[in-house]
Image: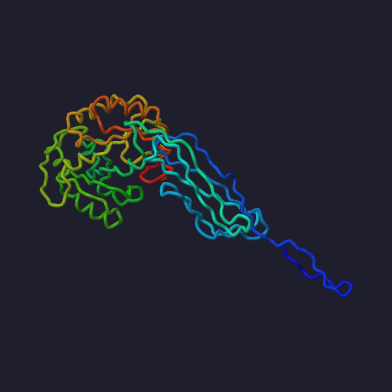
Length: 348
């Protein structure tokens, strides 16, 4: 309350109370209960912060959280009277399977009545199954095989899940190639190193080369994970390439079980369209992996917009002996929440 002089009455000073303009912080809710989620889901919720006072409200510092599994950055430092902002809080549930959790976020402002407000995000995290994995692990395991041969050679035979971009078309592919590990595969080791060096100069630092190209692969591993014909070329021996057996240990196959329309609109680079009825067609290429040692089997991620078909497929593949087959927890929506359109190829 502020007092101001309004006049002199009977020789005495007279003061009158006047309300002082102050900021006031209001929140949409203090507790958000997400109910039950599966371990590996990234929980995202927006708390709405509003200035219901009559002067500018200033956030005196960034919000603080009670653990590294929670983030809550503010992108503004002040709110005008009547203005609101969404405070996006993210909780990483990985590692909390089987636990009831409560995580706090503290918001600091110059509201004289509430300089600190505590918000909570809470719920139960159910353990995920052995045939399920997170979007984080898919991102960690991501390997793209970039086949730079001409389209006719690619059509005759190629590695399962490889993406074909002939050398002359590489400049046009830079806009969508993922900023992750890329293995360049040529016919026999002749052009891969120059392509890889060109990509590295453009910022694709994790670009590597398959030693001996496709010919090197088939000489060491035969028709393992090969679609089509075995090339007749003899591999060129050159230092610095990654051996086929090493690539085999890191090999990633993404099976997309969505509708053809959804796949055509947007899909992860290197994903193989399977749909809801096409798994039988891909099995002949996958089953030889069951004869390999577990560390030589490919990582197989089954994806859809949820977990239904993909989960069933992953369970089925594991029963066949493909021990590294997983369903993406939360489906592609969880990928988009974490990584947006990264690694995605959009249809024209």
